[in-house]
Image (tube, rainbow, N blue to C red; front, side, top):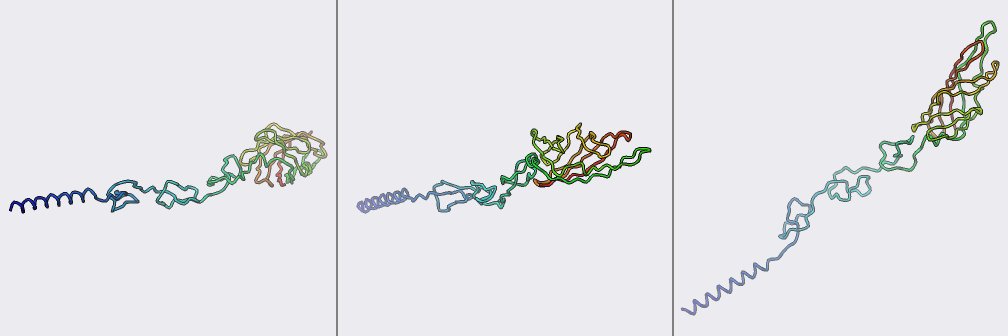
Length: 233
């Protein structure tokens, strides 16, 4: 009887050791154990390497591509090419990538321009003597040379007379105040004319300018007129 008891004890201890040994040899599975992660592994029992959602544009060809995004949020934007220099005539407020084709008014204003003029009819009336038409359209040359003086300022050569004008970034041209040119009025000879005006350079090949002319004529007093000048290259 004692032998049977001893054998039972030995068997119990041996079985306990076997069970204990099995528990110590449990297989370890490394993986993400967080169910909120993108790479959650339900079979993992050792946590590590969880990857969490990072919304953004995942298209590498898009303007707003996010290399850290792992979930596309449908916000990808195409590249919009254009001039991104705010001081250029063709500045594009929606451009996302500069195309290298910015156009600057001061630069394209310079050079030789063909012009045509359309002036208001001007007839000078002198008491007792009579009326005298003044051929204003014939006073302007067929072309003028525009040269740069300083940043934003150009000089227009009108029949040998230099007229200074300011050119803004958007192409607007304004004749500086206090300038005179000499024009041949025909019957009244060459007179000094106060000249003012403004216009705009539309492109590198065309523009317009409205000139206001005022001058003194003996016996007739102050005379004035305006001329619409168009430029082309």
